[in-house]
Length: 564
Image 1 (cartoon, rainbow, N blue to C red):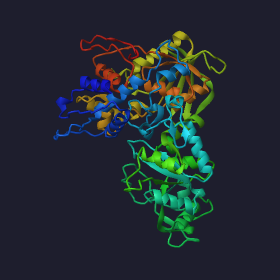
Image 2: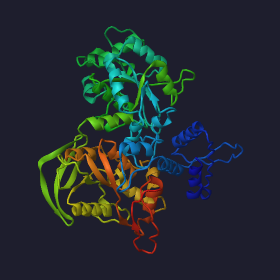
Image 3: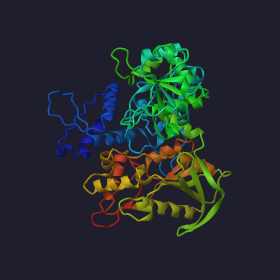
């Protein structure tokens, strides 16, 4: 705790910014966790205080939190450098203290958000089952078992509790399969939730029932897609009782029901599910439908936000833990459902079975094209010495995110083009390896247009992290599930990964791929990107050392050394 404060004092000069930082951290872990939770929850806001009377007041600036988060991960996690042993036992011992799980799962770069899992008082006992440290190390929030147990509970007609990111809605919803709804279940839901009971449905079912959106223009900050409310006509009275509402909910899950069987408005709130589910939108709407479908039920889910009995406020951690323990409910997270789907569903398909011959200035490669089944984005894999299905030796691998400005135009503002060249040279030198080129990830996932807007802010003095945040964009929204499945299709199960990015390391390791060695990517800094590289090192945790100064125009040699 004192070490983190030390870093804050040394690296951030907030006295020049009208924001004075007070972090009161005691040596009791519980208080420290609570303080950190509040800080991360408030991370997008800037605070300035004129009342310094209270000795326990603290003010947190948005930029501080990347340092806090990065410092935590550096202190409790060690990722092997080139040649270092990476057995499961050594990884567990090196990272036994890490309990932070990022929202977008393994793909998050900077720890820009805190999932509900990171707020748990006892991460080893969640929702009536155990989560192992190995699962935490692999990037799960509550563990794969939490998703599997949740599916079992849904099949039995029971509720599950699903939590989302602390930076999104920071809530837990009661969810069950609509076809399993009973008066008793709905009465329980009304008693312990906000009472606004929603039913999430696919677009085709909403069209069948002729349910249009509630308002012409959706102004909800989270774009929750409400349709016109309704009640079932047959066998109901006013529509408000638990009996009537359960009847309406079951009817919505019945494929034989038509628009003539309902009257509008009513007491049930249908929601429009986004095609692709939680892999496209990480909301409770999508989670409820995905869970119901994966449980073998009709893809229609019932959901409502859990509130505290005492004052009706939204239930947060650890309130939700207590609730699950009292009612013997399984808790899981949207982030874990994303990870589960990416691990169990096919996300890409190969375009053509025969590789194309691709001669380059770096050497001759076999080129394989792939298409994402979710968004149709096409990706490329350049291979030498493969496929690798019957080979046990680790394969040299680089998973590279598309960068038009750096890879194609030779921009000096980033290091992307240099990393791409380095990787292709190393693969050709080894005559055995794979470069996966992931398209649609320009600007760490924000797109080319937003990237230019961020560049304009950087021209005015903002760094790469601050620019994205100023625009309301994620610092790093990339995910590597597609890349992992491309590697698996090529027979890669053990690899030597070329990267300086800890998020990419964790992201690929989390999909069942064994990383036997991390190969550092060497490059040179220049006057245009030296500040950018320092930000990646200081705020995003990239393994870069000896940056030095490029002010004289001379390229300083860079290597991705591990921080001690």
